[in-house]
Length: 342
Image (cartoon, rainbow, N blue to C red; front, side, top):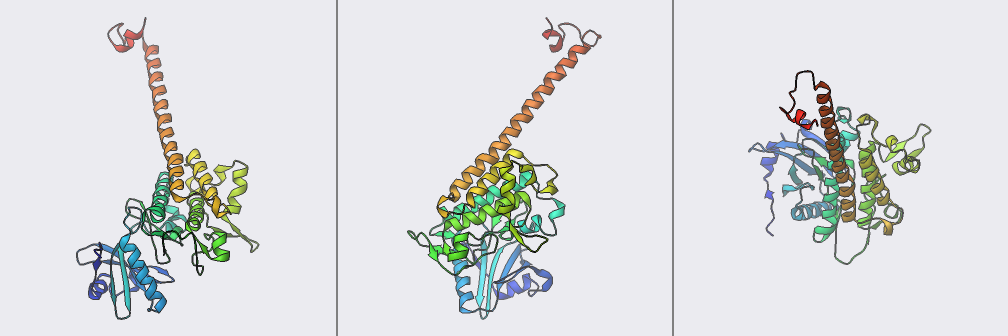
């Protein structure tokens, strides 16, 4: 195989991460921990250190390295390299300086509002394109199985990078769904997957629909209510949609700096994605087209409105010039203003 990755030495990665020092730890998951590091060449990296290798973890390592080695798309987190030796299994990625969507929607950076509305729209289109690539372009097709806010990372330009293919199963051509043990995160799981373990691309579409609602509202997929009950984001959003109260769906921290038409477009697509019947959910390529249509049409419309407003202002400027006509500031015929007067 001619893979576009490096095989790192253990010494190199120990040096980069200060021997996996706690101060360098930037994440934790069922698989192990993630550490920030800087290579001898000065490149910032993220190193995923898998827990002691059981046969299962060994399998996951092999799967992740194999998949990541094949996947190259600007909205997917690419593998830089790996190390396998003794008990250590280390996977090296590009470091993402703006962390994850989770950090900006619910975490310590949510009050900084770095994720304004236009950035959220870019993240939505980028992450949709990343997942669509996994489903439709990658060969064999890949079902992510754990799409959620903490698995959408943001680079220095806030471009979305969908990460963590550890759960992904390679789907052979011609297999519509595989039945497996349920993995993934509550709140994002499609009902048929949660109940019967049926995996298909439409499970990812469901999770992506939940993620869309989360991005525009900054609400968690499952909310604990004061009376101890839980309410999922679809139950919360549905009455607002039925009443046409889209303004109540938008993240209140944005203080109304939201494009209403784009918000409606995203919520409409999201609700199609979370249809209880997997057969009725769209494919990710359709989701990308709809989102681009709704979001980019909104941007075009805003530009047209701005241009029209500027034109009106120009014309109003001309009007005020006429008011000053005759005050001696303009000579008849000596300027465009005068020439217009008949």
